Amino acid sequence: MNQITIEIVTYAAYLAPITKIRTRVFQEEQGITPELEFDGLDHTATHLLAYVDGKPVGTARIRSLDEHTVKIERLAVLPEARQKGIGKQLTQKALTFAQEHHYQTAILNSQLYIKSLYKKLGFTQVGEVFDEAGIPHIKMSKQLSEI
Image 1 (spheres, helix red, strand yellow):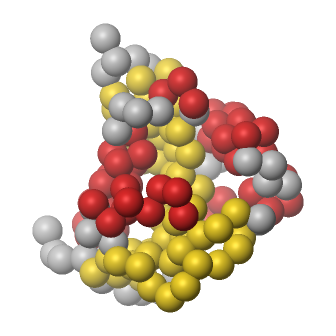
Image 2 (cartoon, helix red, strand yellow):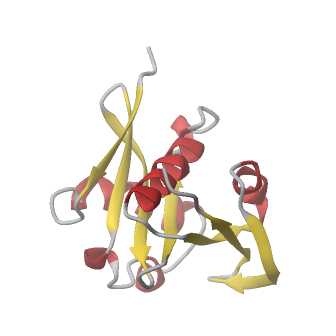
């Protein structure tokens, strides 16, 4: 069936599925330490959960940097749910949320291998490749328009 839904959730209420997804993807697959992955900023962010047929399989967070700018972070999709467009849908939902809340710019630090996804969604590269948690990243930015 593969019905995909994306919900905006609170970290406190959805701590278990968010933690499970991010631990599997970032810690187990990519070797990122828990201290880096769970940086103490989750309680200040808006969270998204992606479901396939009612099962949580992906997540992302949106954090306000200032009154004009949001940062999309911690986008993760479980291996068994990849190649279904879930990362794209999570990003689109985050961008819609940002526009609805009158932000003007969305930024993110993309892992280098996935930057083409963000380019397709209108993000542009800012600066040079840098290392974050031992993984090559690139900062990307997108100007938002009013809905």
